[in-house]
Image (cartoon, rainbow, N blue to C red; front, side, top):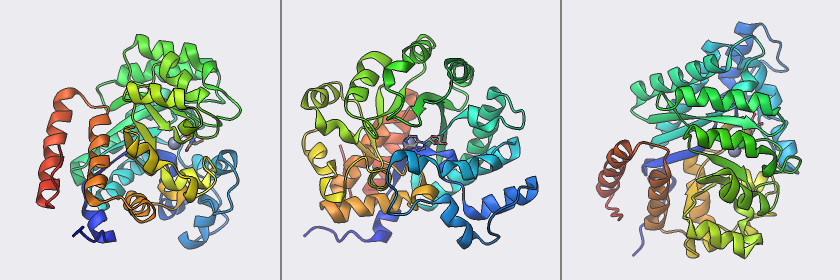
Length: 349
Ligand SMILES: O=c1[nH]cnc2c1ncn2[C@@H]1O[C@H](CO)[C@@H](O)[C@H]1O
Ligand SMILES: [Zn+2]
């Protein structure tokens, strides 16, 4: 008989979160403290009352509307101390949900309003992750995000700083922001520079626009993972390319429903993708903005799509395989995950 998949069992299941935005996981209580330290007035002084300003509701209509929630948080994330703290807290939150490995992404250019340089933002975020790692035993790395609405020069600075921090806590570069208004092909030069520096690339694509952006990201920009990619099903040829090349999709189910990347759970293609042999990973995107946790993401797909515990573990291991870690570090992580899954009587390949 199949094991009953309880929430507690999923919480205990060793997991990874490869798609997690730093500014999307700020705890409301932290926002309150940072705002008071920085002297920024807030519309509410209790965390429960602050949460609606930081979180979307089910009637969120689009990615653009979803992204507007980030305007509330960025003013607090402008100092080294604040960046270090929220990075550390991202690791702590992951530890509560038995994540053994996380990659936290952030856009350095959004954190410079008080004069930090791009390198300084990377320094503080990676410091916070290291502190969290030491305290919680969760391996944590950073991904530097280029923003779609930023200038080529601003994005170039991010890529160049990422090259300096590669192997020092930063493991990859990404492209995020308003996908519908800025197609992937606008960023060819930016990612050519990343390739020149040998920086691994993941790109948000096929979320608020169609598979053409996934095609561009994989075949021209050099993406070896795709952020979301849920709209891949709209083009079977692109789907075949993604499958052949074994490009992992960083699905974020709760966020994907909220941003209307997919019309609703009945149309969410995760089971089909799984059965078609695509490499799926499950992630949170923005725990605070989306009101989710990695446990909830797994529980939701288990309930709605009847994944078995072994299938959930296979998805976890896809994430371990897709981690932007050096081969040696990855082998150690993989062995560690197999051991921990074995303790739960789950055997994976
Ligand atoms: O799902 C998403 N799609 C596209 N952009 C996103 C998503 N979530 C967050 N951001 C954007 O990335 C920035 C840096 O973390 C956030 O400020 C937000 O604008
Ligand atoms: Zn994202």
